[in-house]
Length: 265
Image 1 (cartoon, helix red, strand yellow):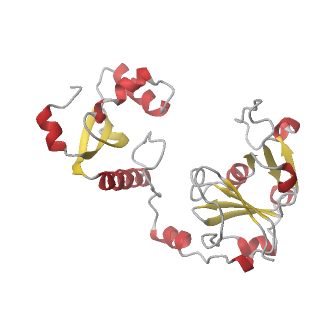
Image 2 (tube, one colour):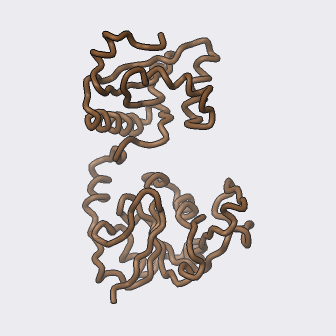
């Protein structure tokens, strides 16, 4: 089956939420919202757009090579667009939290935040907010919403926060502290001792998987010798850690992960 009848299309309503499942395990590997025959289009996209959403396409090809068809499930129909966005996000969050499925969705859903235990929700949203008068240092904010995971290894977190970034070499060398920020919560504080451009320090790159090209060779990363030598963070870093920047005038758009905070005059 590769499309709905006209009667079924009428019954589906304006929007619906659907899942793609592996028939061998009955586990969803993709959750989406759609209209019309959207639920049937993913297999065709494997051929037409092979470089997009590769993880999903690999899963579809794996199922087909094993002699099976992708199971397509209508989870909820007759939704408004807003309801479909909310339902899609809630399902993705719930499935990812249970860790009983391997979702291939590249993003969590429209305006979505992950499912959280109540203790983590309180830590994230109940954190004390910094005010402008609390800022006594030049701060570089690195937003790591997609990268951060609860309980992640400190070295992995450090390497994720420290680079590589498109920043001004002159400006970052005046930076006193770097915040790793997850949805406004400061989850890491570092004190850079040196900044490097990729092309000038390829042996010190934050991660081994980074491929340096002419497009990113001038991007920068920092080193925090205090962290690398396992020295305890200083009192200033301790003060900032675990607080929220939600009340500060900081560019927190998803498109730009880097922003600056200047000390209050």
